[in-house]
Structure formats: C-alpha cells, structure tokens
Length: 158
Image (tube, rainbow, N blue to C red):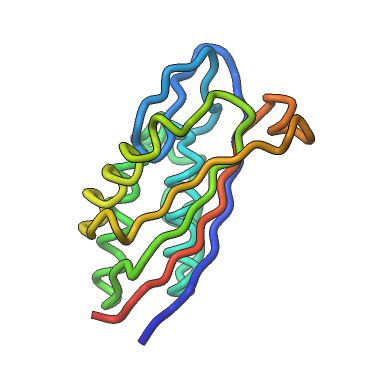
C-alpha cells in the first residue's frame, strides 16, 4: 500500500541567522528566521510525510510555543518524524522536493542535501530528489525576502 503527501514551508530571510537547507549549512549573508533552525526543505518534507499518513503537520508534533524546540536542529526533528512513520508501518518510497530561492545558488549543495536526507530517513540517495529554482526576481523569494520549499513524498507500507 502506498500513501502520497505534499508539504510546503516558507521562512523569512534575516541577518544574524545561519542558512540551513536539507540539514546542510549553506554559506550566505542571511539565514532563515524561525522557532527552530527554519530549514524549509526538511519542514516541507516532514509535512508531506505526516500528511501522507493523515498525522497533521510538524506544528502538531513540535509546537512553536514549546521552548524545547527553540533553535532545534530540524534534522533531529526529521528523525523523530521518520520514527513516527515507521511506528505506523510506513517508510519512504521516494521524495521529490523543490527549493525556491533567488540566492544563494544552491546547485553546489544539492548532493550534500540529498545525502543528508537519505541518511536521516534510512533510505538510498536514489530515492531522494532535491531541485532548486528561482522565481525570476518575482514575489518574496525573487526579492530575496524569504525561501520556500515544496515536497511530494510517497510512503510505502512495510
């Protein structure tokens, strides 16, 4: 049996924060603002996984009014989501994600992101797709005000 989920996340870019995407620190002049490390890619993937299994979203598991998640490493939260999904009898079939950012250029970091995601969720890198695009200087991402990510996940019964 298979289940499909879609996830989306967005965070504002601000000075004084690290830019973390897919569990990888990306050198940049600004980072994403959020209660955790604001990793929009991992957040979108987690929401897709939880959505596929009708388990809500990451805000349900990791509320932003809970100080224990303040500045949390999203890769650790991702591990927990993978554990919850396994407990429900499901694992990753494949993940297809897109990061929308005008800057920085993300192509040099895509393989690292895919490797990190595969390691955390315990699957092969061939099951993980990460792409990056711009919005041709349109909208909040095009104006370099924020970064967003979409993810589609196929969960399979174990």
